[in-house]
Amino acid sequence: MINFRELSTDGVQFEQLIRELLIRENYSINWTGIGPDGGRDLVLTEELNGSLSKKERKWIISCKHFANAGKTGRSVGLDDLGNLILDCQAINAEGYILACSTYPSSSVVRRLEEIEDNNKIFTRIWDGIEIEKRLLTPNTFGLIHTFFPTSSKEYKWKIYNAYSPSFWSASYKDYFFYLSSRDANIYPDLKSIETIIDIMERIDINVDRKSTEHNHILRPRSIFYDDKHCTHRVYLDYLLPHGTKKELIIKPDEIQDLLFNAFIKTDHKDINVPDWDIKYVEVSFHNDHYHSDHKDFYEPYIQNYNSGSPRSRLYSNYNY
Image 1: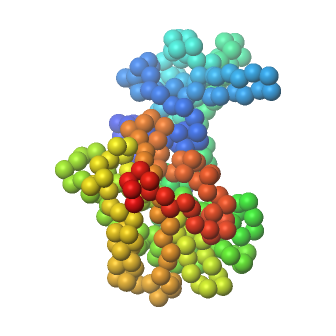
Image 2: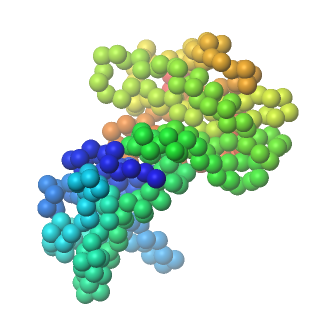
Image 3: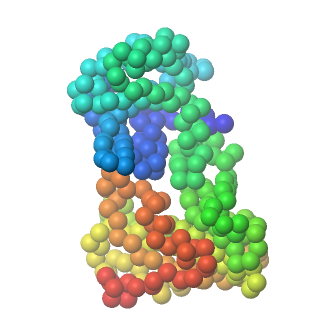
């Protein structure tokens, strides 16, 4: 089980966890300046699409992190809620979510039920169990490794069948990627996949040493195993900030050399030299809706990942 006591006592990491979780669930999230806890609540915008019209519904998310209170943590009480009706009215929110790292008291549960019955405000409770369940999905699993380094040791791999008998979505460490095989209906040996990730992690592409901002990132998107020839095609995205100067970008053939050198220095008896399919992608690291495994990095190339065919290797923005 996830131990929420690993998060900082001031509640900041818990709020960041909830925010990142919701972003990965494809909601629009913003901060709000209301609430009794110093204005650290979140506002979620839910899109409701009907057959005749579309509507947006706002939710206030109040984050309560009491797992570190005392030896075993404490429940959320009525005094911790503040005046949530006024909070919702202040921004025209139709819903209220209590996200807590422990659990609500029985009086809080009754109060939220009364508010929903009498004030036309939808209410939901995400206790520690519900949050853990939400973290165990393919696109949110990596957050366990980001926020819970000790608990994550119990969650090394999680693999789900997807689309076809030989195509899977996988979570390993803080990465999400697809696994596929040419003929076999079992996914590639996980030890070989761990070796491939280890090779990738040895590549240092943070070229701007003077910058304190995000630099450049390599992220795996899919690993195809040709079980007939015992070879892997590894799809990587090279994420870099919009407008990066050309001289600060590592060229494709240079990355290939770095990966090959890392390969020959690795204990790789279980695999042959992989084929690295690298795509350069400009991103806005500071955008509120950015995360490194957004669905837009995967959906256009599902057929490539499934069949093992190369993506377009055009680097026209950089004349490579």
